[in-house]
Image (cartoon, rainbow, N blue to C red; front, side, top):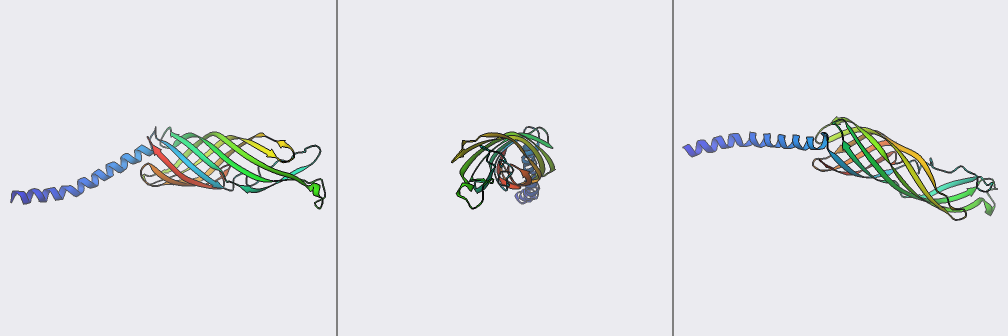
Length: 210
C-alpha cells in the first residue's frame, strides 16, 4: 500500500517537475542568447547588392575616352558578421564581405557599330569591412526581430584587358530594415531585408554562444 502511494505521489510530481525543468532550461538558453555578453558569428549570402545594381560603376575618362561598363557575371556578396551584445537590446560587431564580378568596358564616345566601341573585359574583386550596430525589436527564445546599420569601406581590385589595374577605395554600408533570427539552441537561421553591399535580401546561418 505504501509503495502504491509513493508511486502515485511520484507520478503526480514528475510531470510538473519536468515542465519546470524545461521552462528553466528554455529561459537559460534565452538568456544565453540575448543577455549582455552573448556573441554570434553569422555566415551570410545576399542578392542584389549595391555592386550588382551598378552603384560602384566608374564614370571616368581614360585617355580622353568616356568609359562605360557592363557587369555580366557576378558571385553575389558572401559575408561573415561577428556580433557582441552589450545589452539585451543592442549588439555591436564587425562585418567583412567578399564579392567578385566580370564584365566589359565600352567607349561611349565611339559609334556603337565600330570595333573601337568595345574596350576590353574587366574582373573585379571586392573586399569590404566595417563596424555595425544591431537594434533588437523583439526578443524570444525561438526568434528575434531586429534592424541595423553598418558603415564600411570597400577595396575594389580591378584588372582590365586594356588599361591594366584600376583599384579604388569606395565608402559603402548596409541598412537592415527588418531581420529575423529563428531556431533554438546555438545554431540559428536568419533572413534580412535591407539595402547596401550585402544585398536587398540576405540571409544564412549563425552560431550563438555566451
